[in-house]
Amino acid sequence: MTESPRLLRHFFLITGAAVLLCGGRGSAATRAGDGIDQPMNRQPLLPKLQTAETYDPAYLVLWRQALAEHSVQVRCHVCEALAQAGRTKFPGLTPFMATLENFAAGREEKPVLRQSAVQALAAINNPSAAPALLQAEKRGGVDVALAADLALVRWHYQPAVPWWRSLLLNRHVAVLVEISAITSIAKMPAPQAISQLRQLVLNASTDIRIRLAAAKALARLHAKGVVGMANKLPGKHLPDAVEPDLIAVWLVSAGHNVSQQNILATLARNKNLAVRVIAVRCLLRANWHALTPDTQTLAKARNSTIRILAARLARREKNVAVLARLLNDVRRPVRWYARDALVRLGRQTHLAPTTEHVLMKLLTVDHPRQQQQAALALGMLNYRPAAGALLRLLREKLHPGVRLGALVALRRLAVPDTLAPLFLYAKYDAAISRRMAGPNKQVQAATAKEFRICNDELAQLLQLFGKTRYRSASALLAKFIPKKSPYGVTARAAAIWALGKINAGDKHSPLVGLFQGRLADQSMLDPEAPAVRRMSAISLARLGSVASLSELQGFFAEEPTSDIGLACRWAIGKLTGKMPARPMFPVEFRSNFIAPKRPDSP
Image (tube, rainbow, N blue to C red; front, side):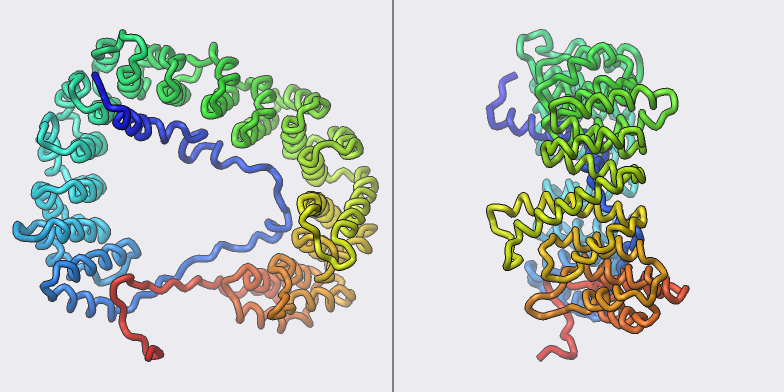
């Protein structure tokens, strides 16, 4: 089968784009973080805001008037506005359904108006419009079919199945329309179309995109005989035949039996990257044991998608050695996933000693990426015997990423014997920060990166002192409070948070006035950083400063939905024992086409 280079490129984009994303949608790979957290952002954990949608009923009157116009352009704009309203659950749209259905299914209507009406009906999401959408799709139009099919599948409208089947094997149908019909048949599902889908897959003259969609549909419909089809695809035995392999891998992607899994295992060693990725992902879901012989090879692959799949396989195998090696991967998502996988294994009693031993050995290797991830993992595992080795990493002044990883781990471990040396380290970092800021407290561009690194370290150390109530650090922490102090915002916020922890209950502390000043600093030209103001409100509550209650209530009333307002709300609740009602974030519906005149508008 010959294809133009442009079509082949498009084909590979639509078939491989999703699988070439590291780990796939919603995988642990995409959820994994860098492991550098800030406890002050979780203690207390401020609530997420809920939105309060508001709708002006005057829109309904305006839309009804506009639909009465005979201009196709105006009617299209109204349909777009109704689609926007439907997506936001605007109440009172049902009376527009009949008009929209007439636009969608009418014989005399312009194609652009039919398309707009179909999109509006799909957005309003009322299943009673299904017959009109199906009739509109029969009138023709690629965009109409794509919008209508999504809604008909969502509403599970069975009368659409015969129409979709009639589009298969029809050479006069647009490719995208036929693909949409195939996808809809698979989602309904409609097993009565299996024979037609088989013909599409086996016909070498059919567009490759259609054959691919049909192969996916057959797998989703659990069709019988897909193994035989995969083995006798036209052109399968030709050298460098990519298309048959891509179709074959989707035919057996369900991996329901040993025969399908054997084909997937063979395709997992395919030269084509897309074929290999799909096969490995399918086997991980169906039977990961079939991939066990290839774990080492997958972990050494040049492509990072394959390597993160190898990490997922190693986690299921409980293969600590492979995961440990992937901690040094050049791609961050791979090493983050490997670290989190090791932490999960290390929390299992029978694997804890092996995992901890391997991670301790990695602290001594000469690979900064591996050292950092090993340090973070040991901290997550709360492995306190690692404290001495982590301190040695700081003394050796290694890569800044290694130092930060060690500090995060030491903060998590919070071993009392480490507080004194870490306090000295904090004083050293603070001195460096003051020196880089210079006499005018302005960080030079040449030292900006080093200043940020230094303050990232300080933020971790200061939160450790707050967590452990380390009073010896109070004098140092107090130096971070002034706005013009030569330290970064995160470090200053951490110092205020830590002082609130250390001096909890001391409502007569001189810190009260300092925190009040930071919270109230809303200078027009140079306002205080929001993070500092937020931590000041929280620390005032921890100190028990009832005298600050009116000020906190004022800021909560002034900006109830901001992070500062939510911090003040928490502080009010802690001081009074009664938490104010959670504020709602107001969201007013606005149409891009037409809007009611406001009373305050000229």
